[in-house]
Amino acid sequence: MDHFKIGAAEVVRIEETMVHFDGREFFPDLTESVLQEHAAWLAPFFDIPGFRMPCVFQSFVIRYGTLDVLVDTCIGNHKERPDFLLAHRLDTPYLARLHAAGLRPEDIDIVLCTHLHVDHVGWNTRLDNGRWVPTFPNARYVFSREEYARYAPENLVPGAPPPFFDVYQDSVLPIVESGQASMVSGEHALNEIMTVVPTPGHTPGHIGLRVQHDGRSAFFLGDAIHSPIQIAVPDLNSSFCEDQALARASRHRLLSEAADRGSLIVPGHFVAPHVGHVARDGAVYRFLPAGSNRGSAE
Ligand SMILES: [Zn+2]
Image (cartoon, rainbow, N blue to C red; front, side, top):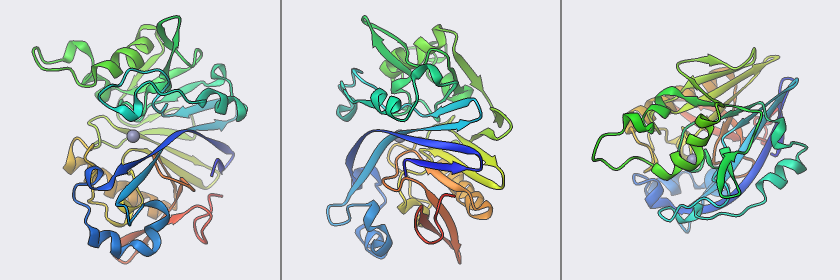
């Protein structure tokens, strides 16, 4: 779904691009037999015969009153990513799609990066006469303090290769230098309906966003969950999860909360319908994609 509501808050989805990952590389512990066991419901969300995981790169803009909050900024255009070819020198009409949704970069009040991986910070900046400048000139960019700390030059281990050096240089540092970065720690209220919540594991300082209004709730999960198969098999980590035990613990906690509260889940990379609900089925969880009987988003 490209539009949905959480009480009076409206959410607009902006897609950047889509790829298929090798499922065995993405989920090293995922087996053929597990895929077959879940094939009946999983087929729309996973290329089971090809063992490939479809992955959408997308942002969500939450519009509430006069506030526009953009969650995650995808890969970005023209970034040099020779070690990660799907992100290398991308050139997509992302900003045109933002315009088509009725939003200008100037309208965005808050940018929230769930973490600082390459596909969540790209549109933080755009190329302007050879310089990387903030794409959203009026926004406060919210970063997790713990997440930022591991990339900051003052915290790098002498002699060790810096993690994601290029990403930091072109997509994070210009925001800090422009004075638009806002580091948050622990639970942090953005306003009366939106709260930043620590969800560590995929990365050490990974954060999510809980939105609650008028009896409705949603949880923007970032990369705590990449694929619906992880709802049925919550212990399944991606090869990109940096702290495997913590990633599992956060995923279990988020699924439990989503099931108990009836929250809409808004993960970073799900294919259509992109969002849904979580139901308990005995000791396990089931995914209820939006638009299915119990999965409508409003
Ligand atoms: Zn991601």
